[in-house]
Image 1 (cartoon, rainbow, N blue to C red):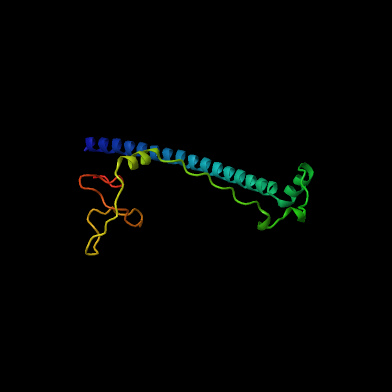
Image 2 (cartoon, rainbow, N blue to C red):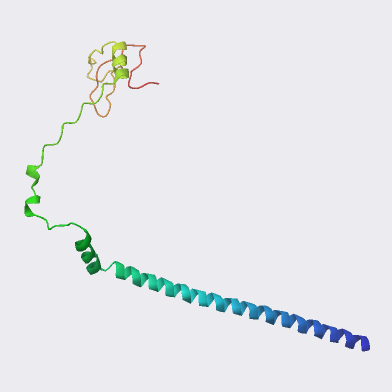
Length: 150
């Protein structure tokens, strides 16, 4: 029975030490939270002061007074406004440079011939138009169209 009393007493001392440790940690955390709240309030006060200063600096009356004092601005003269009719003509766009590769391809291929089919159907050898262009002619057998390559 004595051994049981000693074990219980030791367990009570260990439990009391553990409770004290938890209380101490909780106190430290409460102090840390209080410091953070104080810091948050300080930062909010700083932000409110900065917003008030920005509102003062952005005041239109203050900006108007500064512009009159420091900028050489004048009122707009009605003669400065003009109509669209008085604008100069739009400059002529320069011609696009010639396509040297396209010119070499045109010289290398024989000239297409326009021979419609006898039955009114389009010929199988007729070059298809690009972007809705009408067909340009027939392609001789064994040649490849410069526009569509296999």
